[in-house]
Image (cartoon, rainbow, N blue to C red; front, side, top):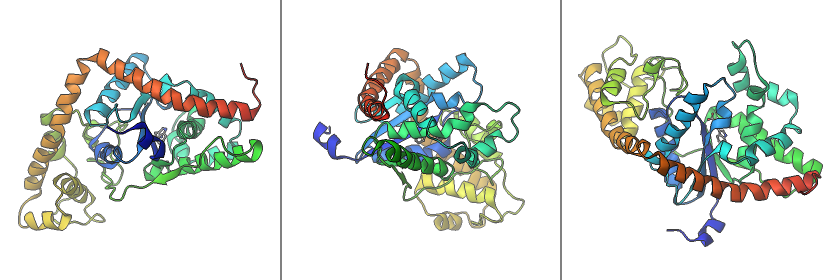
Amino acid sequence: MTSSNDTATRKTILSGSTTTGNLTLGNYIGAVSNWKAMQQDYDCFYFIADLHALTVAQDPVALRERCMSFYAQYIALGLDPEENTIFVQSHVHEHAELTWILTCMTPMGYLNRMTQFKDKSANVKNVHAGLFSYPVLMAADILLYQADLVPVGQDQKQHLELCRDLVGYFDNRYGAGALKVPEPYIPEVGAKIMSLTDPESKMSKSSENEKSYISIIDQPKKITKKIKSAVTDSDTVVNYDPENKPGLANLLTIYSVLSEKSVPTLVEEYEGRMYGHLKGDLAELVVSTLTPYREKYEDLMKHQDYLRQLMRAGAEKATARASVTLADVYEKTGLLPR
Ligand code: TRP
């Protein structure tokens, strides 16, 4: 156990994920395993970004189920609700409130330049303001907790930059001290896991094509099928060439991370053997890696009362910190105290 003293001196890490689809093997390798590693050294806040999920149309029943399932996946993967604060974004109303204050300070032009907004809105008929101001909500998520470090992928860097700039805008207008400028946290070894069907793009939990990703709660048969049908090239020699053989390179990357063997070692092991051998072995490795997590997940989902209890405790801890920041911001902003 860590004493509260340590908590006061440990730096704060915050990260969340939007509840679309299930957590994937890519999330596990790229994000969650790093979050887990940081639990010892930092005061960590991890949350389910359900308000962010609303930026695209959601079926209410499915959304509720997915948030429950996501929370269980976080816990099953080893995020520790005792040592850390693991909560649901919408349970802490300060997120929506700080978002409004920050929205009133965010230049439209800045949001217009966001590449993720451009991508996400490109082929959408009715683009809503929520999708446009998504990065402001993300800034509020971060600033409420006085986060020092935010582990984010490349695709979220621009959003983090806005968050940092917003602190400057706020300080200029109202004076410094309420909000802390966060730093991006780039993990030392961050393998980027690509789609199994289109290895030029990132493995994404929101992909329409279920074959493109492995969900951490997929059944073994499904995992094996997906890996065996992963897109590779028509060559037969196993070597690591991300440029010309992106599909194979991706499989080698996954293999290397999960087996903790280097890519050159693996290439040597598969010399003279076919892609099929590698795929078969990799499928076994992925199944054996994920099975304990899936079993834990299935058990947690049978105990929804327990999950709700953890959520409530997480929301309470999160609120304790967030409410202090928001009160300070309201004060500085000139809103009348109640
Ligand atoms: N936008 C992030 C994503 O899609 C999720 C997210 C929401 C987040 N709020 C955050 C990540 C705050 C880090 C910090 O991956």
